[in-house]
Image (tube, rainbow, N blue to C red; front, top):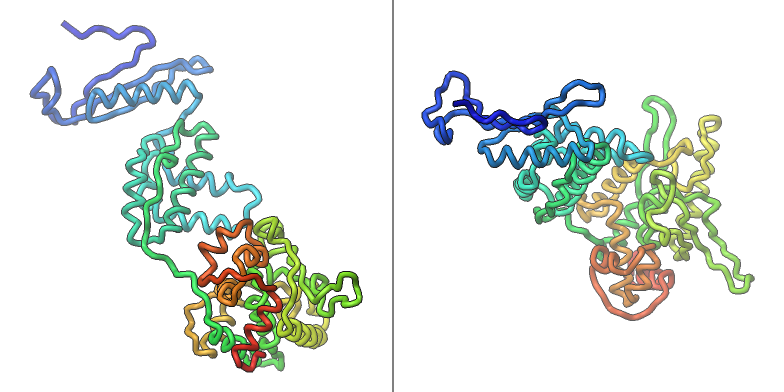
Length: 417
């Protein structure tokens, strides 16, 4: 006798033999080559019948998959088998990051690439939390803990975007924690002697020929010297320094005011999407040490010479740190020149401009300033980041940032004082 005929609207479950094989156990299919198949048959809005199929190694797995498919269909989720994890990531990168720059999109794309190399070809609807966990763990020897965390969070956001667009009913990446990875690049800070050597080297940069064959040169020393002393002695972020305008800088102050206004720079903008600073507390006014004031005055004179030399090619952006034609300075230019200065200072080349900000925090901490005050100077939302990421040494005694920096570099006995 044949099996019981399924009723109207019921799911179908059957065993499908692999082509060319025969069943040796017709009752339980334990030794057969093939897979269990399940099907849900529904009538669509247009009156046509729609079939949703699932498969698995066991009958129980297929029944569970059918239950999950019912839940997805009840929520209005429809996912094609051809829609992969990579497709979900691409949809998120192209349509799920409104207002974000191409640089930000590239950061997320690069972060996702190693994980997509492991699970990118999997149909999104079949992706399991265990597969995400295994993929991340397999990368723990190649990526830093921070990179693994960004990769997992990016994958979770990509699947969440698919979930919001009814592509999937559950975000499996949200069920997984990023494992610990290999040690990343250690946050470093110059010693006082190294910082003094870098400042000295920044004064001695040779002229750069901008256009081969033409008498068109640039003196990068005033530019980089001012950039370096501002970063080292005021603790501004590199993207904040690139966005500073001359009308944000007060080199003379107003000693007759009540209370007196010291020389200072207003950090109101940053070289970021939208121009906003990283956090609201990053908008701050910073007093300027004597060395920074002198360096900025020299840079102003040097920039005026470049403006005259560029003539009609000059772009009046009002920025403090610019190219030879007045246009905004690119981060790559800063990194290249900074690496050259570090090499000239004989402190090594494995340094980045952001290390000067770490140096600012470490020197003030070593000199005795309390961490809460340092946190305000660098524009952190709380002192926790200052303490756990930036600070290298601690002695809890209150001092003023500008006076402390003047005293620190005078005490070094170096020519910078």
